[in-house]
Each structure stands twice: as structure tokens, then as C-alpha cells.
Length: 149
Image (cartoon, helix red, strand yellow):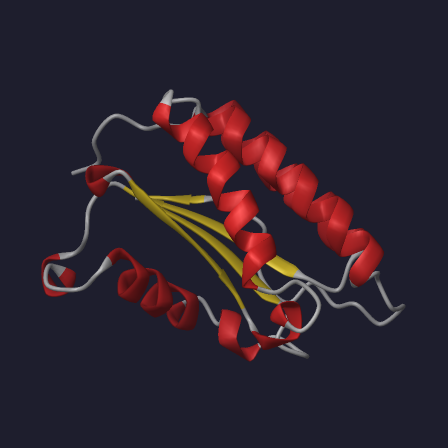
């Protein structure tokens, strides 16, 4: 049973299009997953562990050069996680992600999920374009849709 969605269909489409545009200019593969609650089998896991499981199950750990980025939101626990694979962390260390997390947290605390995601994706896209620009052989390895369940 899905509870009240935090993003409208139009917002989901706009964010998906934004991800597509970012990926055309960079080497990164970005996914956004909104989970309303943990699955029963995950009840004893931390949000970070659940996000890591999601990262692996989505095939994000298999991107060429380790270029996966996951924005994982766990609505019921009012938590989110930003996971970046090894290729991303080489140029954008954990300190960078802490700054993004702080801005997301501020937006999310005001229930402003769409704007927070949009602004954070824009910032991520701008830095990725500088640090990890598209190389010419840049397959779109993963879907760009937002998963909300």
C-alpha cells in the first residue's frame, strides 16, 4: 500500500528529465528512490544499509568507472541517504556530499521535497559537468525515472 505520494506525476517527470539532461553532460548515472517505508525484511537495517541494498539491486554498483549516484529517501523515518560510487568519490569526496545533504535536509524539513531535489540535482549536475564531463562514449546505463514506492 502506497501512502500519500510526496511527488506529483508532473514533478516525477520533471525530475526524470532533469536527470536525463545531467547525464547527457556528465559521466554519472543518477537514480532517485523514494520509499515510504522499509520492506518487512529490512526492518532491522539502518536507512544507510537499506539505501546500499537499493544501490546494488538497481545495478548502480556495476556502472562503467563506478559512476553511480543514488538519492534515497525513506519517508516514514524522515531520513535520506546520498550514495556515490568509487569513481564519483575520487573527485567529489564525502565532504561535498555532506553539503548537499545539509541543503536537502533543510528543504525536506519543510516538506519541500520537489524543490529540494530539483535544486540539489542542479548543483550536483553543475559540479559533475566540471569534474566529470561527458567523454564521448557515455552510454545511458540506467533508467532515469524516479522510483516511488
